[in-house]
Amino acid sequence: MSDNKDAIQTEEPPIRQRIWYRNAPHASLPQDTEELIQEATRPLSDIPDALNRPYVQKSLNNNMLEIMAWNLMESLTAENEFNQHIRRFLNILLGDDPDIPIPFDFQDMQVSAYHDQLIQLVQESLSRSDEFLYRVNKSRDQVVFAIEQKAQLKRQLEKTAK
Image: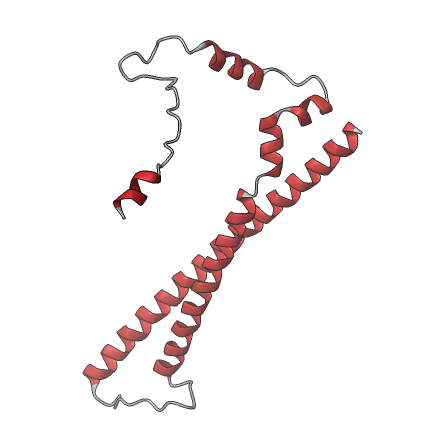
């Protein structure tokens, strides 16, 4: 068993050179880093030039917005399920659910006061859940719009470059 462990050697990733050191934050950057920064910040001359730059290609081809839209949709789904449970509970408290009778005697003033407070708290919770659903849905709509805009830009750039 120990011979096997000696035979298997894990390959360590190469150590990346640091471009910034805490003890010398204003020191000059290595030459290759300066060239990289100058290349990235060089003005675009034409559309094929833009499409040939790796960071432009990376921006047009990455799927981070799609992942964000998917995560927002999952949040919407989970919150909507929670929201439906709150709605059902509120219907039970209000006596609007025909399947479940209200087990309280509301002639007692103390029980009635607690019941009213509980209804108010559940309504506030439902209102907050509705607001959260609305805001997440708006955010997702904006992310989907950005995805469409990015795809349209990519198509236009590729069409113009031909």
